[in-house]
Image (cartoon, rainbow, N blue to C red):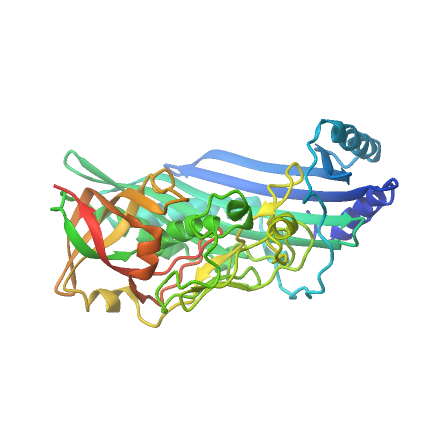
Length: 452
């Protein structure tokens, strides 16, 4: 990648493909080019280093309700012509789908954003390796009981363009980076794990010291953990745990999930589904979001969508397909896993509108509770249709406003519906993570905790 924006070249290629559409055909060309770096350090030495480039094109042809797709990991013009021909051939293997079609311009303006930082592009490989080594050194320097499992630096650079016979013309580029560290804290025969991370648009934005201290704290504070007694209790979810729950809730708010009958929120638009304290927003136009973007996977403008407004379910997120199927409007939420995939509907940058108090301030007002620091098997433990969930957890007991003894090997169980209604406070401690959901402390009353 160079500092010159070459996404226009990709758009020109996509336009040439679209210009070859035949009578009665809808054609979409999605073209992308990317570069990523991954560094893993162990005991001061580089254990893993990968710098990978990729480029390719995916083409969809729709005719008579049938969709044919094909892709190739090259932008060679001769191969591109073969990809178009193969997509047409694949029409013959497709089922008729009455909702098949491409996105159309909807008049929503693109929100200008600074998604590409040339400083990151100019960062040397040696600086990236040094950051991973620095992260390991800082982590080991905090506590002699702590070992580093791995210390990592990663970045990604991407350019993409999409053009369609329906009038979509869009292109752009994005880059970003993060560091992460996994820790092991030992005390006799006991070992506890922890992690820390930092994200940014440039390496200068990465708070390496905080990533190190978080990883040490998360591991050491669980040493000596025991299984708690079973009871119903107030739970404080750590921001990282909240982000995992939000990722699952966001999946149930996808138009695709609703159309398939795989969402607990189907048929509930306009209902009060959460406490009035909760406003849930998908906002890829927020520059603080690691997954911020200006266009979605179909070339429509990304936008701020309020999904739950003061407890009321206001909207699902839609691709053009799910919008047609559910007689709704697209929301700029077409997501795709690169040039080889077709777009689906999904959240891009989910977050809860935060409150005002820090986690420490919140805990100071709780007489009896649990700070849930880790969960295990959450995705496999949630039923997206019924909303039932049961997940293993570890954390710290809260007694009279103070964090106390560590606990582990217990489960917390409820339903997503009940959990959303039982939120009694939302923290102001927003954590922007290298994922499609941000974290914040959540206080939930009357949760079933099963231990000893």
